[in-house]
Length: 249
Ligand SMILES: C[S@@+](CC[C@H](N)C(=O)[O-])C[C@H]1O[C@@H](n2cnc3c(N)ncnc32)[C@H](O)[C@@H]1O
Image (cartoon, rainbow, N blue to C red; front, side):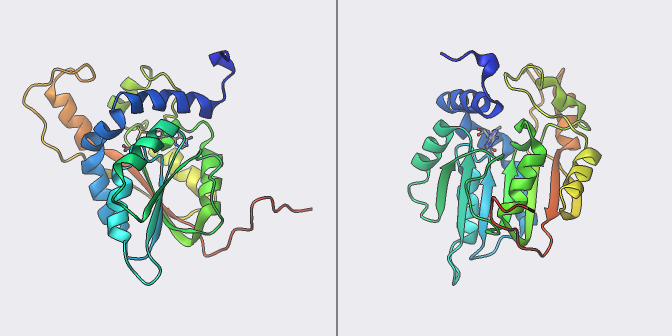
């Protein structure tokens, strides 16, 4: 049994999220993320025939929503759900037997197993803050996105929503807690264009009484939902990325 201290960051994430998957948490996350995801999908303006990547797809519920929106078209629309946790991917496949334009792949955001210049749009829901090397993940996204492709990264955990930092210390894997401005700067430094940050409130009703452990009372929970998730939007410039392995001599 390898010493957990020497495991790679991705292997730690794989093990952690495989446990979540075995506990049924992959499917449960739909209830927690559906409101912010639906608002994001509306902004993505998905069209028939588009090729979409769902990065950190979990049990695949959002992948299937996207698949329905891009189905059809002269060049059939398709969506790839990618996740580092193989048990999440196994469940996503089992949950998606009726969905013939979604494909689920095991792999890391830091080494995306796909061709250059392929995806018209990328969606990533509640996954990006887990990546140990976010710059490398952005470089990989840039590589696999089509020229003028659009990136939509949605995260609930970021520095400007102080409530969200409460659960960072309870997670068994490290997380990044950058601010909105730091993320905007990072996307620009990674050569993305038209970088914007939008706040997406959680519009689900809040019960009158709160009995969970993260908030002191229902008012705090309401405030957390009002501050909302951070949606980072960016575009790849109108350039083709060279194939992987291309280097300046
Ligand atoms: C909080 S869950 C969200 C899952 C799904 N997007 C949803 O909203 O239900 C985070 C997901 O990101 C995946 N993930 C974490 N690190 C990853 C990485 N480096 N590459 C790919 N996926 C990763 C996890 O395995 C997990 O399924």
